[in-house]
Image (cartoon, rainbow, N blue to C red; front, side, top):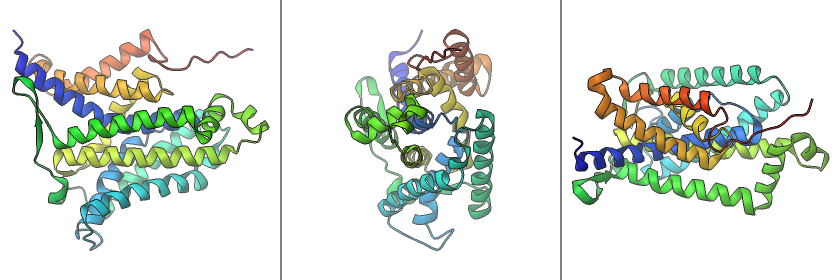
Length: 304
């Protein structure tokens, strides 16, 4: 018999974890929605965000010891700038190129980021400053509670998904991005700067992903290379919701977070260690077989 209090606690943990995944997943979905790029470096970009705080807020790497809030803001700004640089230096040259070529580029990018961080900070876990390890939690019914990092994740992921939906629907820039995503050639004929839309998409995506990486690190007290493994879990989330659907990515991440927590608690004794990671992958396989475009993915019809 399932204990209600335990089930609620695990569900809250799953929603909190899913909210952290959602920030990274929405960054992935934003890139695909605007550019059509499957960014398999998403896990490494989240890792870069997580270690950015270590680099700026602790003297262990560059000798800096900036206040935690300044380090977080600076990490997000670096994410924005990195998006602009990547578009101008790398991805601009792959507009119109085969999808496989771009995928290989993102895999190479992920390897470069991971290797650079291992060279810079080493392979060991790096603790966050005390200011980014809040000990407070919010009490819920039946003895359940939700910790600080999960609470922040839920709030920020809701703010991001609502903001992006409003941005795409009600702003001129958002309308331009939607037009470019719907028909790139037609948008170019109408005078839309495709390069500019791609710059905006990459900058926003990496900034949002950096926030997700920071919160994932906060949840464990610091940055570790296990964060880069989140990339494949994020892929499961966005496939479930629909690759080009930002609300779908948000919902998919919550579902994956719940499945991971349920699997870790209830299925480990049956399946063995790693059940929490296995079940979301099985779920991904089932989703692809039944509904390849996900719940909210756009179905594209091409005339031959």
